[in-house]
Length: 139
Image (tube, rainbow, N blue to C red; front, side, top):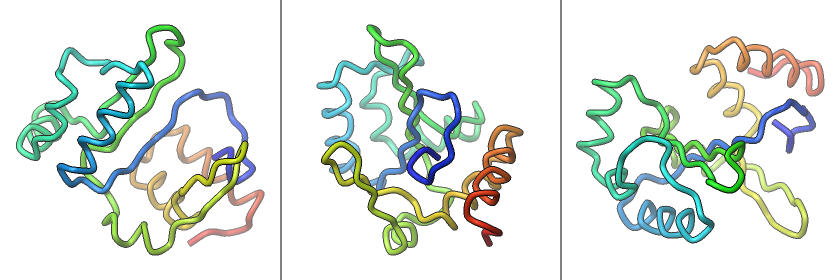
């Protein structure tokens, strides 16, 4: 939201990964090196298992696997456990934003709005309204 000019009070980051074992392993290593821990009592390596992710979705209604930082508990990283939009489609349309010398790949505005519509939470619907005030109608 912030990288599209829509500020709101949140300290979380939503991450969509290409859900390959190699990529997930790299993510788990990196997030662990940064000091983040799973919010649920689970081994982060459980995230590697497609069967476990499917079970979390079916039995617990999970959409994301959340990590938090013990020294900064307001910092949350939510990683989608299934991609609501195929990763390859998102990759083709991604936008690159620069912040503090880093290039950050983010979903296209169209995909961001689609993800928020899929979520359907009141805060996500308000986000869509805010994005459309800034950028005009988004399909």
